[in-house]
Length: 178
Image (cartoon, rainbow, N blue to C red; front, top):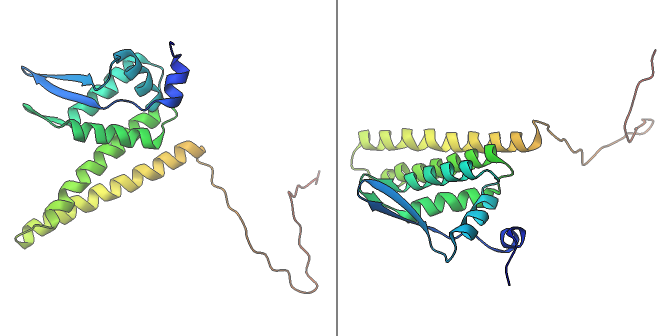
């Protein structure tokens, strides 16, 4: 029985990427039987219906796992899973989610270095890089929250005390002074 795109997107998780170098070119494949189904599911995962956006973003994520002639599919698949976990609602959220995954992966490098420093200059350099990257990630989290809420803040008052002789109004208050 043939599945519709909506049924696949609702039930499936995107297959992992398999990266390899073919000469000097990075080749992207997927661990699946159908490239079409993998593409449809990944497009849902990254919040797009635009094939060119999908192709470009997947290429950028794949490049995060390649360096010169070596490839690390696990690193690229990790970033893709970060994007998937954020559940982007549109292309801008997908871009931010990709940056967040890349910044987190980069943050772990100076964190690891900081645990293995041999002198004060190494410690200072690792600490500075770790601090900058951690702050960048926090800023990205704030940006995502602001984008999703339209910049609106919601304040909830959970406790109000009215002393003897005082009055309280519960509900919306409008002024009709004309």
